[in-house]
Amino acid sequence: MVNSLQRYKSVSVLILDDYSEFRLSLKQMVESFGVNHIDVCTNAEDALACYSEHYHDILLVDYNLGDGLNGLQLLAELNHRNLLKYGTNYVLITGETASDLVMGALEYRPDDYLAKPFTKTTLKSRLDKLVEKALAFKPIYNALNQKKPKTALSLCDQLMAENKRVSIECLRLKADIYLKQLNYAQALSIYNSILHKRELSWAQMGAAICYLALGESHQSLELCKLIVTKNPSAVEAYDLACECFIQQHDFESAYAITQKAIAHSPNSIIRQRQLAKLATRYNELEIAFNAYKRVLQLAKYSCLAQLDDYLHQLCVCTLIQLGEQNALARRVKKDFSSVYRAMTKYYPGIQSQLITELHQHFIEYLVDKSGKTGEKLMKTADKVASFPDPLNPVFVDLLEIVMKHADIERVTNTLDPLVTKEKAKLIAHDDPEKSENFNQQGMVKYKEKAFESAQGAFATALANAPNNPNIALNLLQAVYQLYKQQQKFSLTKRQFALSFNALKALAPNDHRYKQSQSLLNFAKAKLTE
Image (cartoon, rainbow, N blue to C red):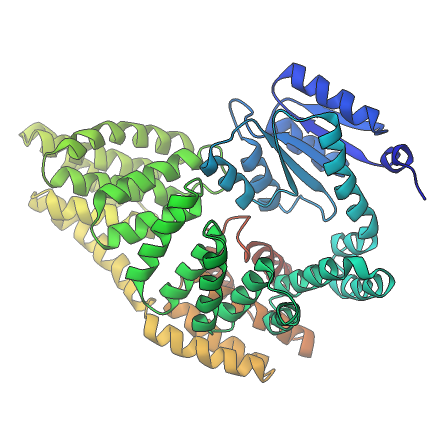
């Protein structure tokens, strides 16, 4: 049997903390366990570079890191860049005890979570478990890091036969591998085999994910309800239930369940963004305003930041400004300038800056409808209209608000062709009912292993619902299976672009994220051959 000091000799550790005394204390603790390879960083950017070079076995990361990325955002960034290796254990350390911060931390699925202060004994106990598991699963992790999922699945079976104590963990990993391959039927079979013996929340969640992906949203929803009945803080189940309701076109229920999830864990960009969109749908502008404001706060330094969030916040602020001049309207006035500054800093493209300038002049005109402000607005509208590149669709809503409320004929006549043209494109490519029909056809063909027919159906479905990530995943999986079956690759560049755009908003902690990146990388490689 390998003793403790011997076991840690081959372990490499990266410590990330901006507080020198704690870094030193943590380093001394880890050294006393027998670790020889220890790297220490003071900020997330250096830690990214260091991990990319050494691929440490354990990352001990403090939540608060001063300016720049925090500990959670670093984890998201590592996943976003596909840098985090199987077998690397990410341990988040924090002095925060507020429930919303703790919930937010756990949602990103670090391998462990340590609240300060903690003793050397506590740290060693936690690390012992992580190191023991990493050692047992090392051959499997190596196979996965080498992109050999079949070998990994075989090694899982072998390990289960040798060590019954790790059977559940092996089954969980097998199901996860199948999920990443979008083999939902196989993953579901494993989850259900576990649930026949034990009611485990993670297995219920996995089965719910599979049911939704297979188009059985009602069964998925029933499992989500079971999970939250047992654990009201299971926010992932609320999020999945929201997806189920949206698939069923029950947007009111989606809105209600998202509000429940936010009450438990508000520190999620994706969840706040969903709340903002649904609140806007029901004209609950104060909720939308606060949600988008939180999105922008959480997105600072994050790989999940999107230009759309700033534009939607401008739209919501403008609609509030055009309504009653109440306390909320007075509050939003202060937000315009901060959004303008952020857009100038993070999105310096010419078209983006022109739209920002147009909106600034529009707000000035609303306050003072003099000839001078009107002239500035007209000149900027002319610049926007004469810009040589096609209009980015994300600007349509903002331009439509300006066009509708500026009450200047020249501005309306200038912007109307742009908005009408882009909206016509969006309408032509957005038919939810048609999309759902073709998606169902694709699922039937996929189950029959008629992958070419499935690909055609999913491609039509995506063309009619270009922002639907589930359909994009279905399409890419059909493409992948067709290639495996017949060595035939027929995805077009347009279909790839639609898939990429539909999937780009997925967060690294989203259950679909790693699957989407793997399939996109496969498709990109085939397209460039």
